[in-house]
Every structure is written in C-alpha cells, then in structure tokens.
Amino acid sequence: MQKVIKIAAAVAALALAASACGSTKDKAAPAAGSGGGGKVGATVPLLTSPFWQAYNGYVPKMAQEAGIEALPTVNADSDPAKLITDMNTLLNQGVKGMVVTPLDSAAVVAGLNQAERKGVPVVAVDVAPESGKVAMVVRADNKAYGTKACDAIGEKVKQGKVVQVMGDLASVNGRERSEAFRECMKSYPGVQVLEIPAEWKADKAASGLESLLTANPDVKGVYLQAGGVYLAPALQTLRRKNLFFPAGDPKHIVLLSNDGIPQELAAIRAGELDATVSQPADDYAKYGVYWIKKAMAGETFKAGPTDHGSTVVESRPGILEDQLPAPVITRANVDDKALWGNNL
Image (cartoon, rainbow, N blue to C red; front, side, top):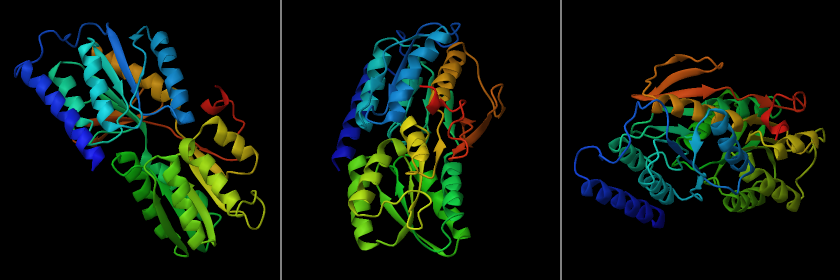
C-alpha cells in the first residue's frame, strides 16, 4: 500500500506540473529533430546489484564514444515513485533525451507522458513499459530467459521439485521470465515447480528460500531470475541448510541464474553455479545511447533486422523493442573473452 501511495503522489506531482504549463507542449522544452545535440539524462534502477553497477559504468563511456553529453546517472534506488520524480527533475534540467530503466512497467507511464508532453524522446532499457511513448526499448527476450533456464534445469532434473525465485511481477521482465519458465516446465512432467516472489530483493530471496527449503529439503533445482541480487543469498542459504554440494556431486542442487556478471562467471568456474543467461550490460548502455541519439535527431524506427545483429520487434502496439542476444554461459564457454563479464 505504501508503494502505491508514493507512486500516486509522484504521478499527482507530474500532473500538477503539466497543468501549470497548459495543454500544449512546454515552450521551454527543446524540440526533437534538432540534429541529435543536447544533454541526455540516464537513470539506473538500483546500485546494489553488480549488474547495474556495471551498466552504470558503461553509460558515460558509451555516451562519450557516441559524442553525446550525458548528465551523471540518477539512481532510482528501487523506488518507482522516485524514478518518476527523477525523470521530471531531468526534464526540468533541460535534457533533450532520456535513457530510462523502468522499475514498474505501469508506473513509469506517468513519466513517459510528461516527457512526450515536453517533446523529449525516451529510450527504455531492460524493462518495457505497459504503454506510453518510447522511441525504442532496448532489452533481451525475457521470455527466452525463462525458457533457457527451464531447459538447462530440465536436462539435469528429470524428477522432483525445482524452485524459481521470481523478480518483481510489477515489471514485465519478472512476469515474462516467470510465465516462460512455468510454461516450459510443462514439457518436463516429472518436475514440480515451486515459486518465491522476491521483487528483485536479496532479503526476500533469502527468507523465501529459507522457508521453502525447510519445508522442501528435497529440492533438485533453483532458477534465480537475477543473479546480481539473488546468487549470494541463495548460496548462503544452501550452505546454511547443509544443502550445498558442488556440481558433479550426486547431491548437487542444479542452480541457474540470469545476468552474466563476473561473480556468476566465477561461481560457474568454482562449480557453485551451473549456468547463467548473460544480459548484455555493455550493449544495453551502447544501444540505449545509439537509439536516443537517433531519436533526438528526429529519426523514427520500424520493426526489422538491425545493423548490429539483433531484431527490432513490435512487442505491443506502438512499442518497438531492440531484442539483443543473450547467450547461455556454462562451464564450456565461461572463459570466452567476448562475454562482457570477462571484460570489466
């Protein structure tokens, strides 16, 4: 309830700002199509995750390489209402484009509407909004994350219980990964799926896994939808419950995650983690900047193949996604120098 109240307050503040300027676009706002110049504002959802720490480091680097002036990134600190406020602050600072990572796919629409009213294009990274105007969404196919994790576990677990530690279901990412994993697991009829709603929060993952393993010490596999925040507490919980055994041991609980951070790669090498689906933190920043530069220059986009090995799809009416590749990392390819997690 507190979260809803905070978001409502932020939305109300945006509405008040809008009404104060009248019903037309704010005359003080820069017009799109001015050649791609001007400052860009960027947000990150949190900085407690190694994945987002890496992305945060890539943003200024990629902006500089693209010849774009980027303001220091703003940390929403896992608060959807703060993200909306941050977006409004960036707009008031006169940015001509924004690269935003939504926390709540519905709540962010208020910020998108304000940006549209001011004529400022927005690129969303990692999470797609429910609606609203974005020039492009840069993300990987999150349904594929759930399916890849399911198949990797299903290859090793033919019978028994597996757990998926879910992300925030207010985010389209959490929903897509969860639904895809659940649907794919129907192809493995000997497997029973148990679920923990953890909201991308380490403490919720730890407490949920603790309770679930107490009631189900016979779990055979665990899927962590965010290795950056879930891997450490999951391993700690398994050890505390005397259920941690390295890969290759007959008692080993198969462990899959998403992110591709260096810590996951080290865990794969150590036999603690079986595999991860690598989210391209470097390319999220690179192509977030790529698309916002084009949008600021007044370009419009359509579905189809890109010049960088991905495909733009219309994920929902009016919303285009540049779906970047996300490889599965196992012991076989963990040392591949092309992986961003090996190049920080």
